[in-house]
Image (cartoon, rainbow, N blue to C red; front, side, top):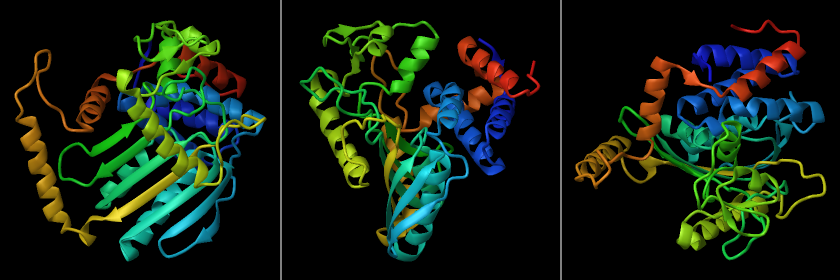
Length: 347
């Protein structure tokens, strides 16, 4: 696998998106998110997605330059139609709107529909956290293809349905939750497949409902299990709630449409900490809470207790020094796209 600097990955990807019809702003923003995911150690949401996005642009499933339409709005809310634009661009703009509203009204909430994949969900609540707000976001694939079985079932009926929450703090690394409500994000299976690695037992079942570690069985009609193992009902219930907020409340509905077009329905909310507690007091208490948790004696097999988001922060610092590992299959696909668009390929 090649080891690349974040800048090289960013520049290669940006050139491809520009050649595929994206604007300067769109190409820049999408690649910031993709490289950011690689730096955080979440390769499933990094450069590996670029070929998929280009294919969607070619099919018309992603529309560069799509209008951002606010269909309904109050002082504290909005319903947004992304018109199949880049999810990164649409959701970034929606979060900026929500933050601006919360600065005036202390709280704001948005729904978004008809936009493409938004990538790593944490990126958006973290925008709010950097402004001194609490950010929350849930996401669902709308009526696109489903990947996850409901607890007790053996046929996929749900998306991976992620949820993310971020808090402001003065710690070196940001504090946030970002997780699929399934046993694993679908993109992580794609990474395993690209690297020819098995999946851990408990991630997927085959088309007959049998547990398997063979990633290919998922792509042959299998499905992902809900988060929680033998307590999978908890992941299932969380997924139900996310789909209600991001699928039903947005107006996308549930199930699978005949077109199967990927559509990231999104619910996001922003809360002004100072409406409840002085911001500096909140940050101080968060820091003390983290110190309290990190002082826990480590269990066997562990060296320390980490706060939510600390692992990603440390990973980013390390990868900025060492470079980012990209599997050969992904980099070869990127090089093929550069050749297709007549772009100079980097060494």
